[in-house]
Length: 132
Image (cartoon, rainbow, N blue to C red; front, side, top):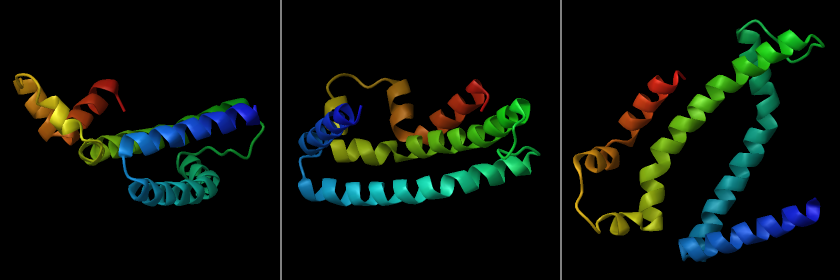
């Protein structure tokens, strides 16, 4: 298992170097990403317990219903925030990857213009439709 994880990780970093075309950019992004991942990973149990207790449940229990309620109440807000953050970062990632140049190949429709100019509006509409 660890062997395959090492192979997967090496392949991902190789692809990132090829896609970003800049080792300096990759190093700076990776440093920020790994630091944030470690900090949020350390804070995650405390944050999830805090959110669960606000809704009247706790992870410190042997009762399966209470554990399920705590999981649902802690995970749902975090998933919604993560979804919105990913949508908000989309324009920056598109610019870094150079996808804008590839989008201009054909005629641009009204829907494509709205999607390109307002990812937050699209994210909000999708969140409402999905019931987040």
